[in-house]
Image (cartoon, rainbow over all chains, first blue to last red; front, side):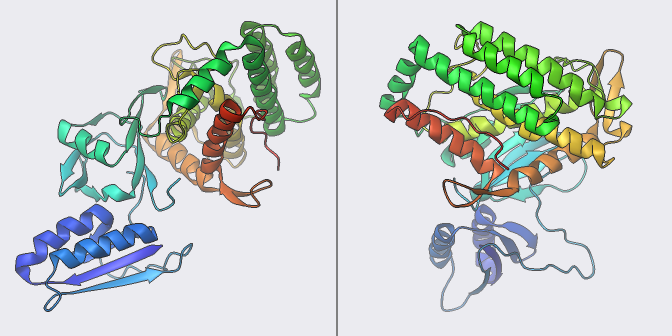
Length: 87
Length: 326
C-alpha cells in the first residue's frame, strides 16, 4: 500500500528517525517520506519507529492509501517529482 | 514474489554507496538519490556503475541481485547473493531429468514449439503458417538438441524476414546479428533480450532450480546460466519482437535513439531510457491467468514458468511452456 510519513521530532532525534525512514521510504521533503510498503513492512517499520522516538514528545503521522491505489500528487512551487525506479 | 518491492533500473553511469543502512545513488550530474533498501527487489544496471564492499554486504543482507548489461546491451553478468532457496532434492531431480535423454528432449521440444508459436503469434500468423508446419514436423523427427536448435534457427530466419517486411527501412534487421549488433533493429532486440534474461535469472533464483542445468541449451556453457537461456527463449518474442513492432508502428523509435556506426549499432542514451521505460511498463501489464483465475503481471509469468518447471522436476507433471494465450 502507498504510505506517506511525516514526522516532527526533537532535533536531537531527527538524525535517527531520518536514517530509519530512509531504509523504508523515499525521502521527498525535509521530514516527509513516501513510498509503497507491504503490510508486514509497515508493521516492522512501525515497531522500529516506536523504538527510536520518545512517544511522549515526538509525533509521526502516517497516511496509508488502500492497496492498488496511489494518491494523486500535486506539486506547487518547486517541483519535487515522485520517486521513480528508473535512474 | 513480494509485491511491495520494485526493480530499479540504472540508465546513467553512477556510483552506488551505502548510507544510513540504505542505498545512495550518486550520479556525475545532479544530486544524489536515496533509495530505501527494503523497496529494492533487484537492480538492472544498463550503464557502468561503481560499487564497493559496504554496498555488497548490504545487498547481500537484503537478498538483492544486481544484473549488469554491457555496452551493447548484452547480458554482461550478475552480482548474485548467496543462494537461499536451494534444495538439494530439487536439484537432484532436475539433474536426473536433464540427464535422461528422452525426458530432456521432450522438454526441449516443448520449448522450441512454444517459442515458435509465440513468434508466430507476435510477428504474423498467416505468413508464418507454413514455416510453422515445417518446424512441427522437424521437431517431431529431431533426435538431438542440435537438430532441434537447427530447426528452430530455420524457423527463426523466416520469422526475421517476415518481421522485416513490417518495419520501416531503417529499422530492418537483415538477419539477426549479435555482439555487436550490426544495425538499429538488432541493437533493440539484443537490448530487450538482455533485460529479459536478467529478469528471468531473478525469477529462477527465487525457485530451488539450478540455473546451470538446462534442457535445450548445452549445460556446458560457461558464464551463462543455461536454464535461463532455455526459459528466456519462450519470453523473448513477448518482449523483444512485440515491443519493436509496437514502437516502430507508433513511430516512437527515432533514428536519434541509436548510435549507428559502420558495422555496429547500439542504443543511445535517450534510446536506452525509452526502451527501459517501455520494458518496465510492459512487465507491469497484467493479464487474466486462466488456471489461477486472477490477474498476473507479465513479470510474474516469468516466475510462474520457473515454478512450473520445478514441479516438472519434482512431481513429473508434463511441462507446458508459456504460450501467449490472448
